[in-house]
Length: 429
Ligand code: KE4
Image 1 (cartoon, rainbow, N blue to C red):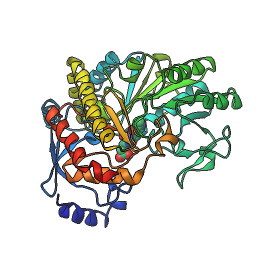
Image 2 (image 1 turned 90 degrees about the vertical axis):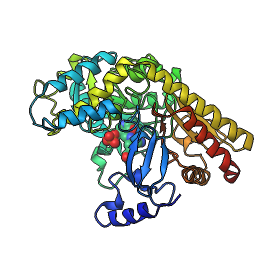
Image 3 (image 1 turned 180 degrees about the vertical axis):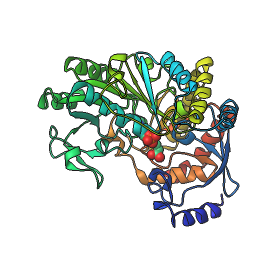
Image 4 (image 1 turned 120 degrees about the vertical axis):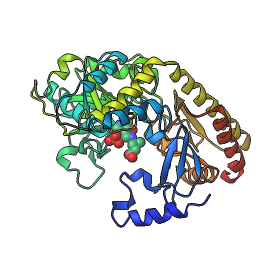
């Protein structure tokens, strides 16, 4: 594969955009080399600036669950754009998408649209603090909820002390209100709730994690977390930016059988345009301005163009729920094929999969939390990433990401992917 034009475009971009990208993970820092610049995409395929055709396993980090340039979404956006893109005034389509989302997701009465997953999670935390009158939150090491200050926190000095900033610009004043627990470790949460009795507004979690690779909660952990939050009068926030409308119509709440108090969305709900959202029961959501005292706002929130993409996307998913089964079957097929190659080649690996989320980890140990995910061999991962890319398979450029399958992927594409691994497997030893 030739990547000359992508490299030239990257050099040019770096003159005007920090790191040449508008989001760090795109810069290939974790895998080395220059990022690929995309010219266009259709269905399961990306077409880069050097004319290469790539089978896509990131789907823009989740949104394009039905494949790129999906006709009903594109047509809806074109039709809507001709009537204007944003007015800063209420439009009917916002209610249509809100109504559809509320009908698909269990346990929510109202939803507020924003423009990103970060904004959704940041707003959900403010709402939880405003509703409970308490200030601290618990998050989990390795879970990512966007780049709001309260989330850019690493473990504090001791297990039950507050967090410390993991980015310059985040103040200790902010960090002190974020406590860090370990995923799949209910005891680590209990330690924090007992050491901070009556001070914790909310626990925020990725109900199926996708930012450490794909990590699945044990039933004991996720149901125990629900009970602990209920017993301790702490709100449970499910960050479903990745899982919402991907794992099923009702997302992780439905497939795990666990009700959260507040749910956040992004990615799929926008159909590829910038939409985030957060939702809860009426009693909580009515705390939001303009009716309630918790302030939250946005110039482009609910803009008709993004709403038209989201409505078209969710309508497709709502009317064809067989899509989720199809995606899960394709992901299981890919899992089986990759597993067979890596096992036969004798490469230490773990493959985690849930619905249409999957990740490959080059480690012998089960990957159940951030610590075990970090034990993966990154040198092997880099060879794997570039080896697959050379054969026209585009995987997430970081071992700490989940793949997101799209339903435009054919079984032929999956076989091409599995055969690509076969060709490079011996180089991974
Ligand atoms: P955005 O602000 O990037 O729309 O959403 C933040 C976010 C919140 N919650 C979860 C569970 C997420 O996965 C994300 C964003 N996901 C990353 C991929 N790991 C987006 C890719 C990027 O940062 O460019």
